[in-house]
Every structure is written in structure tokens, then in C-alpha cells.
Length: 348
Image (cartoon, rainbow, N blue to C red; front, side, top):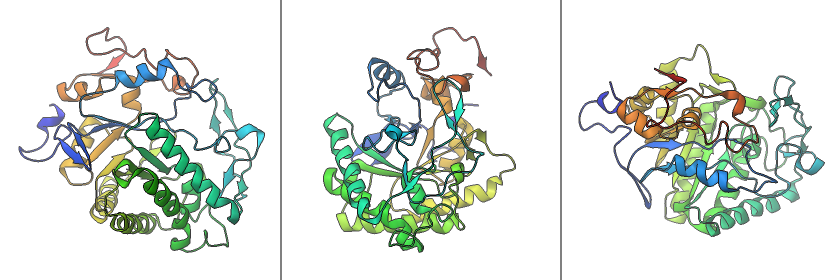
């Protein structure tokens, strides 16, 4: 059964158009932002253009891999300096950084940003957003998820600050909102989105009250939209089932769906959900009102024509995890076959 046949006629599905602010989407299958590590000296080249053009569809939404807002912002050994954070606490030994050669290295010990440094970091995000628009992108997604810098401020399992950026929910949300206000002021709310993962616990980024954190962020996003008189492009939320190694085991799907739907009902705007979806589960999530759009990562890596495969209920190419983060501009990046090509190595 094809994904569009899984729901009753008239119910929104993966192939129902959606108006996302100023953007008219023809379907609801989104390419999620992912780390692919193909840039040479931090600069994209022809392989990137081919990779994204392979996955482009008329009226589709592609979110590119992340880019650092400054040359001091890399999480992986930023020019030999300690990566900036909300804390001086190192990550536990169970987490490591995947390197392009396939090895895993320990993360460097972070350095807590001084309070006086934070306004400059906010400006890095603002300038990066302006640069993105000048480069021809339609908008930017602020990465407030998955243990990266903003997530380290949001979550009380990481943030141990005693200044105005630590302690209460109001304080822990402050950095994110300051970044969003700066970026929205620069390029307009309709070109700005944000990703959060309140329940996602990668890289020690945990919170004692994930739902409370998610609702606190959404409350502030709704207020920000009212302040600027325009909605953000979207809010992107990672489901708790996603982990660094794949889908979590023993996930209570009913509780998970309830959590995502609670966030969806609280947010005044378009919500994208990500994290281990299949065509069928993505379809059900939209039909049940848990999300407006579904983003796919690993399935989109190995299936450049994923939208067509979902629509035709076609078999999917298997992905090779060993090539996720290599420097090869072809293997595991632009060489996965389309439906009209050889179908060796596909899963039914």
C-alpha cells in the first residue's frame, strides 16, 4: 500500500500541498539537515550542488547541512581552541566525534562563554544569516538541537551557569531568543526557522523536564512572532526515538506521539517532525495532527528520489553508515541509484 493510500480521502498526507508562510510546498517530505563532511577547507564545491539537485523536487523543501556561523564555532577542534559552550564540563567518555576517516575521537574539553562574549556570538548568527541570503538561500534554520551550542544553554543537564543565562527556564531560553531576534531583524521572520530537541539526549544534552522545556521555548517563539508581526517559517522538532546510532529501543510510541502533538498544538505555525520516520509512520503522524511536515535524513541519503519512491511505494536503497562522514565527493554521497537505474542492494 502506498503512503497516500494509508488515510481517508481529505485527510492531510505526505503529498498534500502545504503553505509554509511565504512558501508554497507541493508535498510534505523534507530533506533534513545532516552532517555530511564533504566540504574542502570548509568550502562547498560542485559535489554539493549535485547532491542537493539530485534530491530537489518542484515545490519541495531541502534543508542543507549545517554551517558554522564563525571560524571559532566548529565543534570539532576549532583551530586548536576549546569549543565554546555554556559550561566547562567535558562530555562523558561514552560520546565521541566521528571523523572523516571513520575513526572516533574524543571531544575537546569545552570553554564556558563569558557573559560579555555572548552578544558577539549572537552577532555571528546574524551575519551568517545575512551571508546565507546573499548566497541565494531562501532562509536559515537556527540549530538549537542535538547538543550543539544553543541546546547546551537550553538544557539543565548541561547548563550550570549562575548568570542571566543559567538556572531558570527564562534564563536558559535567553540565548536562543536573542539569536532569533537578531536574525529575524536582519532577514525577516518568514525566512527564519529553528530546530529543537528537548527530549533528545545525545552528547549528555539532557533536561530534567523535556516537555516543560519544549513548551517554554514554544511560548517564547509565539511571543516573538507576535512582536515581529510575522510567523517564523517553521519549528523543527526531533522525536525522542532518534539517537546517534539509530532508533531507540523500547520507545513508547503512544507517549511519543502525545508529546509531539502537545508541542504541535502549542506552536502557532508550521511544525516539522524528524527522527526515524518511515513513509508509513510519517504519513500517520501528519494524518493524526502530530506534524505538518516530516523530515528524513538517512533514507534521503541513500534515496535521492525518496519522494517518488514513497509515492510509488517502491523499494528503498539501503544506506551505508560507513560513508556518512567521509570526504569522498562521490561514494556514499552522489552515487546512490535512482529508480530508473540499477536496483542492486535495495531493501524491499
